[in-house]
Image (tube, rainbow, N blue to C red):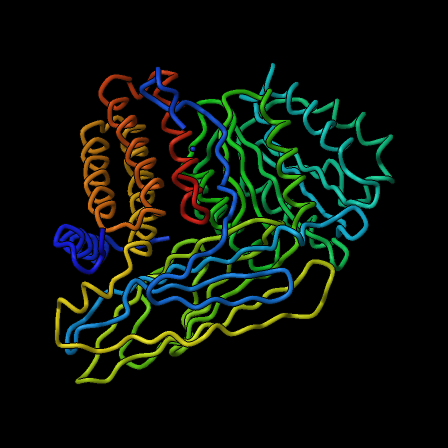
Length: 482
């Protein structure tokens, strides 16, 4: 089907562009027999070959390749046109750290030992940390912090080989009591990694089964950690933690957020974090967009954005070998007369173990000015619009899950129906390669909508669904998961 000739496609693109322009930007598989996905494990897709769109430019350098694609190749003269940039940064799979060149790592495990962790949860937590310790190398570094009403550094940052025999006894003595003070534990973990030796890959892994009233403080600590080159991942255990709170810590720390029903799954999460940290090949990945006069930055997802004059600097963070990160940037362009616009892109990163910075430029992207609305429509890229629609829908679906968890089932269903409609519009304009992901997302939201109607939010199944759905949709912001 021709993108430029089919009226159906043109209508889809136009509707999709309207939805995206008004939706804004901020900022895993349902069993057939279940109305809710449950707590399945979701991971990002294996990155494939990046495909150039109508207005795309590729870049590459040692250990990294990527592409920036604009949703438009033409803009309407004298009117403001919403533009979306879909930026992909991929750490080369063949650059995955091997045994002989893998950089040593520094992990701070920040463990909830509040009273609600008593019983099976604290027992599994002890076993899981012991297993993590056994899997680490002697030259890796580990710090263990336990927190409840306050925090305690059970083990300051030290080489694993120096405490492999002595640390297990202290871990086995961990007991559960007191309240939950997440910022206290986060702060202790951040300070512990300040002692990390130069050249190490650093990560905080925060585990909690509860919630507290200090979300803003904890989010600030996660942002500060990321700014210092430390990734923050978070794991929620059980059905009583605040998934919005815990998920936001991972988003601000550019790590992973996951939910498990019980402590038995904690070991798998810690092992994944260890493998991902050990497989890190790229750090401090950044993309800089140099915007022309008449174009302004609106918002971004998948990266921390800072505007400096006409430039937008996007901090993406670290990537493991084979990892693909997605950043969606919303821009607004106003042209005068027949003058077009150009966008310049620069990407930079450090390879793990190297102190030098690699900086490369992508070919310049051009937006032509036109007086024809039909030309603007025919110059739009359905793949970029599909990607942006998917991210916006996930952001809104997190709101739907939160509304459902709070008992507002009607609002949750309303948001979900709007998302289904927007995804369906994007599906009309999407090229064949982009369609399956939209279909998968629509199918998942259809199952969620059915679950909202049939499963009480206060039930165990309802709580589990709200958390696992939030996990999936938050992940979709930075990595394509549908």
